[in-house]
Amino acid sequence: MRIEADLDLCQGHAMCSMEAPDVFAVAKRGEVEILLDPVPDGMRPAVEDAVKYCPTQALRIVED
Ligand code: SF4
Image 1: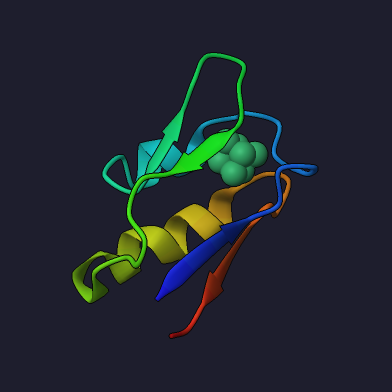
Image 2 (image 1 turned 180 degrees about the vertical axis):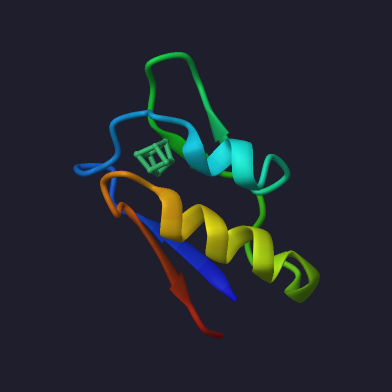
């Protein structure tokens, strides 16, 4: 599994990094950075929550 982030949509809310801090990093008032590519399957639940709770729907899971 990989993650695509639409940086035009991302507004740096950092909900994603709260849900899955090992996968997402967000600098202060910055844009999301994907830390793991691909993402290990064990992190799928946290990543799905991050995708779900992103207020701008900037994140997308891409299956390998
Ligand atoms: S939650 Fe969404 S908008 Fe906020 S930093 Fe993450 S990807 Fe960007």
